[in-house]
Image (cartoon, rainbow, N blue to C red; front, side, top):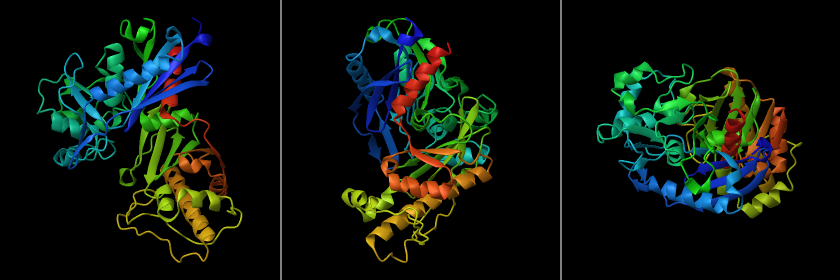
Length: 425
């Protein structure tokens, strides 16, 4: 098998389903398959899920995908999962308790303890951090032998290793990517260090597939993965300092590649290791959800055709659904600003788009002030990326090229990691 003929698989463990895709060594997307998973169980602030549901869905989606290709040509597989989702397992990788999901906010006492001991710059702060969940779970399940993140566990099911993670998934559990180790201050929290996985860079070949699994060749490599949001970033092709990606979904999420880490937790800013560089970013509460409050999809499509990006409305809106913002300003009392009301529906629509675009500019300026480069170009993902007039408005605001990303699916980003791991091995 030559590298030219090799196929690579990316698996994305999402909140509502599992998606997988296959690419060739030229990065061409050949097939994508997906399957749903049941919603997590909510009990107050506690949000849990049976990890076996992830494996059942992964099993199904891979069988669907392998029915479309020659499975013997698959040379590498990589997995991404939701950041902060963790579970405890025994020596063989069997979960000893339900997984605590990424948005589980139950561990308030543990978060307070972390705040009293951990350095301010760690990403392990907050009730939803992997570390807070570990501190809650550890005394309840003394039989556990491994702490795993969502992607780690699926990797283990594929190769039999349940003792390894990647730098991105481990970040919210306290891993220090600058020192490339689990920090000593974890001992002050009485963390059982034996539970913690070995951590490697995303895109590292860590093992070969378990014997006879899915009919794959024994030399098929399992490559370390990343989080879902980082995989989606990788999918766009952004990979050097100054490359930025804006996600225009219900909220506004900004990320830019930097040659040094940038951290300001009061603004929700922290940095992931990305190869030789760092990925810094933040998220505003503004975004498409504000548009959807005032306009339905048909109105948005109709009004977008009549926008005049080169003729600013002059309104100074700060579009929010409700009071409160963290990035690019940290003000829990910040009020939505959508007054005075424009005299036409079209002007009101354009003024909201302009307001979100200014927040995007302020966000990248904030990251730049903290040490990240200002974007040289901006790839755009999310539903708003398809709005060409809005891209023009944003381009005028930012002063750099803005374009829709060709690829933005997290599974495609994981397939690129699989390819990189194979080609670098």
